[in-house]
Image (cartoon, rainbow, N blue to C red; front, top):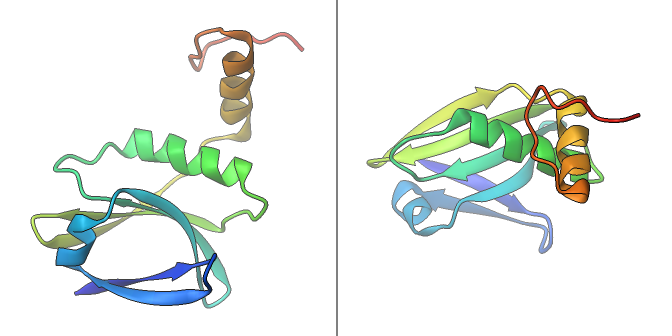
Length: 115
């Protein structure tokens, strides 16, 4: 089993086997498949932190000029692939995190930000 990834910089597709994926560093990318844009995260850790992936995918999508239609994590563990759909964060959480980063505040979902 393998995964095909599109490299936007070089406009190439590459098929990676499960063994090759183990050698890759975790990566966030935008895959385009049948006109559907998928913000994808490749993870090779033993334990998958979905909430962390949710934040990372949402932040990358906010910062990118092209919005994704879906978020997914490709999790490789012990030679097996698990594809996990991820629900994006609401925009207000990403905006609040960035404001906190600029002001030095600590973000929590209960942070009250000034207008």
